[in-house]
Length: 317
Image (cartoon, rainbow, N blue to C red):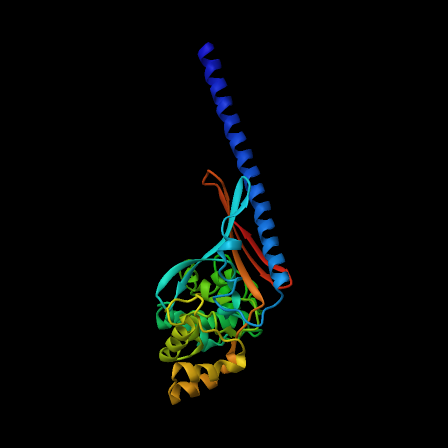
């Protein structure tokens, strides 16, 4: 009887400890979530104080500002707003502390088939797979039920899946909708998600766009390399004080002509694509990580905001 009661008490004690640990974890997550909301509120306040800038470049305090966005102290916890940035000029990865310019990405609701096709080819997909996904994007967002390409997909394809649904026939509201498309997979999504957005008017910020995005637009590699290295300045590293910045869309052609020594073909090419560029942005994504001091407990928050402080997306994990 004593042995039985002892075993029972141990089992009850273990169960209680598990429940207490579970409740503590919920409370910790709630606290970290509240702190993440506070940090994003700080960012929104920061944006409102600055007002919309005339230009956004990799040197802006919004884009990389460790002083304001790294290890923000909240007593028991701290929060960092950070992301991995690949510098096409130096071919190195850096940790940036700040906001991600959504105008450095391709708007999936505005891009035509050729831009989407090139993007998938640039992330090393086979031509047939690239065409399948690019055309399926067009069919997902267009209002008709006609196939854009023979290997694309409309309602007639999606209705016969194990878990059936229909093509949206409207704009993408979240990038994650891509997972629903014919030909798409989680691995492919991870390859392209950082180059795509659903926010903005579709114009690309020439000050912040990556090499892959510029190439996907249709610019030749020689012209893209000249843009990248001109932006980086003499030290060859993007986001430093000697960067060359485009302050106005109307100066893009003249500045590149004067400083990058473009040949006739590149000049014609730049003139053809000049209306695709901007030097500004109104939408920013934020990757916030709230961490409990002295432990490995952390909460990641992804959100998208604009200059007016409107929140368009909030994901916690």
